[in-house]
Length: 199
Ligand SMILES: [Zn+2]
Ligand SMILES: [Zn+2]
Ligand SMILES: [Zn+2]
Image 1 (cartoon, rainbow, N blue to C red):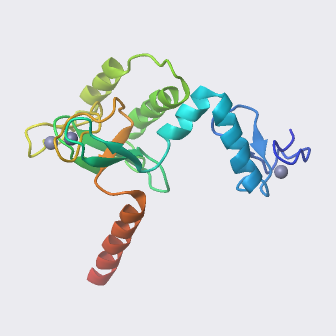
Image 2: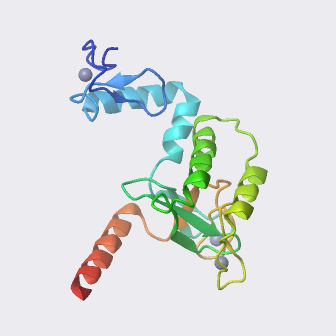
């Protein structure tokens, strides 16, 4: 196998594989290079599914509610270094950020099934309707927390507007937040700082 950017051969051992295309890899020097960014940009102009994939994985993508026009930010679930899976309320905009965790062995089988559906949703433009299968998983999980709004925190809930609670996007794999990514990072820092103070 050779590096897609610099054509260096035999990079099997150290290759960073592309998450979307099979058998596409980069050498460590190229993976975060300007040339790799341009390669991805050129690819997404040609390939609609790749463009959709990158758009779905954008962290904190701004999304105006079409009913009340409030700006929301959409986050793909389970990105970054944490191992938790966020769940939304099925009636309001509340998000439980640590509802499911890979650290909890009782969640592991459901999380691996969720990952399969997530992958299909991200990579296929025409994915099958997943509502039934996610509702089944939610019943199996059977730990649904009641929300103060009367709804429940559910595996089969979609992101809702922080202002009017209407569905923002038909995805079981995203949640909505009032803050863009930078603010979120700052918020996490503030939380960490206050947590450190307590100890
Ligand atoms: Zn290279
Ligand atoms: Zn709720
Ligand atoms: Zn709204």
